[in-house]
Length: 339
Image 1: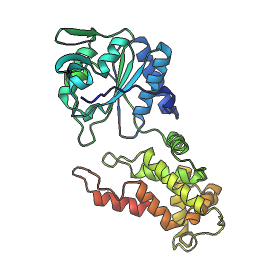
Image 2: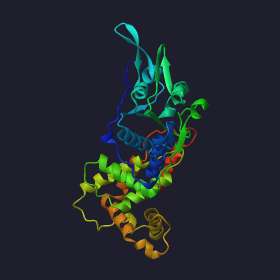
Image 3: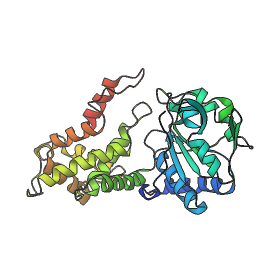
């Protein structure tokens, strides 16, 4: 029998960055601290739900001096593997705790991630645990939840293919919080955090380029094509590696794309809107140093290389399941919108 027990290493949990994430963390923690109600954090893929839940678990575990656990749901799991059940040991069946029962019995907090990647039958097994009595049982073994037991569910919302709907009896026991994609400034902070954690090389990508990539990602993102800060961070890292390979070259040489464009002012206005976050008010805005810096950055790695990096990072080459939506149309939109 596979052991699904997973205790979180609190030292390895990334901090929540950005105003929206910190505000949600504070609101959720208030419920954890003053009630025993189960939390359900829902939102689009890549919005940062799991990181918020892990920070909740870390804060709660340290305050109450209890362990924190993490488990991902899947259709293959059963009550026996996840909560409590009979397992064959040395030729006989014995009652064994799963991770949820362990957490209930000892006191602690558990994150149940990807809740809608399971099946309704598994979710219904949580009902007795989410009640005011908070109990689970099999055979003659019954476990009542410790006073310090807390549970936090995370899930993508129902816009994504493959997600199950929540049974009504399960849903009515939850306190739900919706967390959408953060604002652009917050996403910039998160991208910087991911790059610092995942890339060992010195980050030399200018902020103007990061803002451009993030705004492009936000423009291309949709319910059916859920690009996130992960995609933007991949693009920044790949750009960074290209820059480091060309570190001896001059930044003063402009790519012919910028020098010879038939509609140079229109192209610059397009760039300015993404970098400045608003329509340029005058021609003088087009000479803003952030726009000049971005053009030098792209010239350094080459326009075609920059386009290729964006396509790599934005799932262009992957056969993504968009349901009834036209994947090729989405790919053409990305390709024609890069620069």
